[in-house]
Image (cartoon, rainbow, N blue to C red; front, side, top):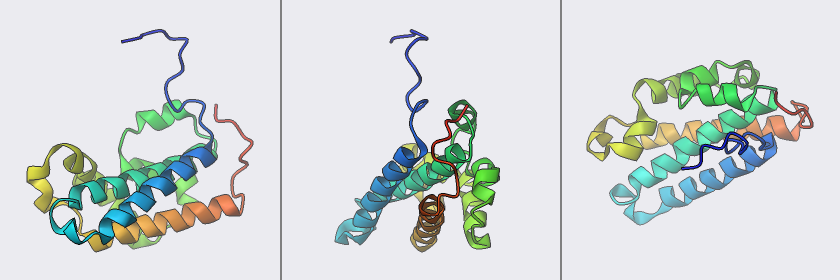
Length: 157
């Protein structure tokens, strides 16, 4: 393992729009997996992982675009409650159900369950709620970028 401090941490220099585009790719993958006939079993957790990861990337794009440093963002880990409370996300004016679901994703640890604990899948969010949250967050963040809500030339830090 290379501990050379001169090598930047991955994502440190990534522009917010690049994070948005990556979120779009994960959202597309989630939607494709959600439409597969075999979703009932084999693809449910991968579809949910892609959706949750896309949601997190959308939140990250908004937070970085609002001027937050990548270092501060990393300290938030996968805490959707903390991320959704950040001023860059609050400014999006997400629906109450979406905000509540983002908090639930953290409280119930859905992100970790879909990655590491398939035996706990019974406690995961309902697919319809997850799809609605993904669609809502994607739309709000995408619209904010389209309207240039944030100064994209602003480098965080």
